[in-house]
Image (cartoon, rainbow over all chains, first blue to last red; front, side, top):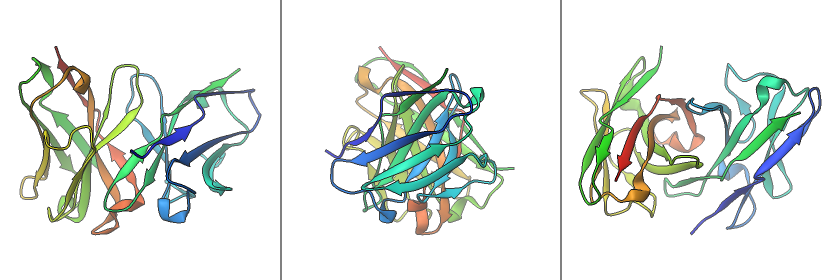
Length: 110
Length: 122
């Protein structure tokens, strides 16, 4: 069974920079994994932030960026704001129309 | 404006069945693959199923394969999730979501989510 792994939790100071990563048990994450990133706050559905590794949605703040970092997908938040405190999930594509979510990262802004 | 509205959730006993619906508006429904994604209480997101834009292909997570069936009616702009032989561990908020890419480009990801409907199996 394919497992997608994220850091369970991270803490960042306001104004700081933090990178969340997303790895696959099957091997390196590549552009063919078409990584997506989502932000979720309590009681709300997830909000899409990034698709196909690095593309932003029209509503995605400029301080969010997606990339590949070694063999992982990465989401970098720059100039972190208090409202960025949330859970973040990655989604990877594994072919044959199958995708898997990561376990999520709880980001604390402190 | 693109909109997805789920319905059909509720409380059901283990072993019973339930059918969820997701009504779509604001886009050409028949051009996009649709997903069902769930989130158990206090847990992360779980990809459940996908159905291609034209209904020609569908896939399921191993945890629901053989028990859940995804379908769609493009004339009604609606996608369904028929859930049978429900288990306690199926308890979750069920979201439907729209693929970003049209046609076969479903793998680009997801760009619109509904508000979710809650299923409780007990």
